[in-house]
Amino acid sequence: MALEHAILVSLRERAGSGYELTRRFDKSIGFFWRATHQQIYRVLKRMLDEGWVTVEHVAQEGRPDKKVYSVSADGRDELARWLAEPGEPVELRTDLAVKIRGAGFGDPAAVVAEVRRHRRVHAERLAAYRAIEAADFPDGPAHTGQTLHQYLVLRGGIAAEEAFVAWCGEVLGAMEPS
Amino acid sequence: MALEHAILVSLRERAGSGYELTRRFDKSIGFFWRATHQQIYRVLKRMLDEGWVTVEHVAQEGRPDKKVYSVSADGRDELARWLAEPGEPVELRTDLAVKIRGAGFGDPAAVVAEVRRHRRVHAERLAAYRAIEAADFPDGPAHTGQTLHQYLVLRGGIAAEEAFVAWCGEVLGAMEPS
DNA sequence: CTCATCATGTAACCAGTTACATGATTTT
DNA sequence: AAAATCATGTAACTGGTTACATGATGAG
Image 1 (cartoon, chains in turn cyan, red, green, brown):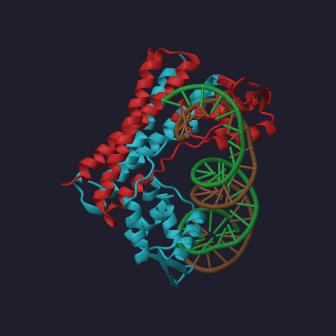
Image 2 (image 1 turned 90 degrees about the vertical axis):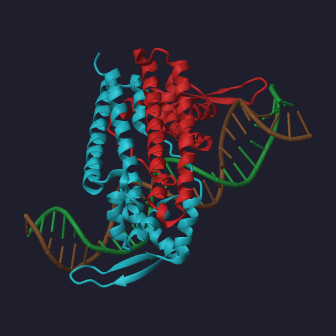
């Protein structure tokens, strides 16, 4: 379970509130890990109980107060421990594949339309990632440290989306009205 | 939620027991959807309650009896309905990316070792998929019907594993002792 | 006046994992 | 004698999603 650890990474990059973390999980961290605010608030509470983070209540003018979380020494230790620990390589789990495999048990044309829709979404995500790459990482792999690491993760998102777009294309080529 | 529907697809290809389904989810269907026997038995029970499948008790010699499940008319309708229904395109969720992004907060060399391990596993899966491709689908995209659909799903697994292997390679190239 | 943004939470539910449990037969 | 295969299940737990709930400020 990596949400705790994804939050630790994000908070080590910069302390923030649950709300701010939710925004980050909608953007950069969201390339590879999604989380809703409900989940983040719940996990932050648990992390606080475990002593991995500390809170500071911050009063704001014209806006609701917020609770700013920071990683504690225990949290830093836990993150370092987890980083060195082996984990399971990802496995793909996509219902699109189930639909393709089962296409003959329904309307194949509807499945083809669904593949086309998925290709469009993946192509849009790919374009968005490429725009971020061009804007934020002009030096490509010549970056160093944290910037390099962020760049490499983005490259993973790009590689995955490219693969999905190409696969959808292959499926369409083989299944489209022939 | 696609496990019900993955089971419907598998049972339409061939009726079988929970145990047999578990075997199939370890192999071909497992390229893109995993399930343990506990989960399969639980879901089969629910599907029986919903009337999507029927059971036949089969006594065997020298082996425990088994319950063979088949898809009912309602199950066929449900599968056809679901096949035409739009679903969410996959999102990647991998802790390896979290580890790469956080590498600077721990021992980067340990993260590099982890990336190398993942590359090895993905390369092994890729080789296994390619072996299946060569053995079971000699005609490539020239297949038709159900065989074509199974082939295209396997191609998706191959595309995904290729992308992971390439990405791990890129990460290693940028992070390895420099 | 309405919608978006900022900000935090609870509660119910669903899906998936891990552990426990049994027991015969066949293979090593 | 031990391990693998065939065969089915229950129970507890964990993680994630959806729905509900509140309330201020600022922009259109």
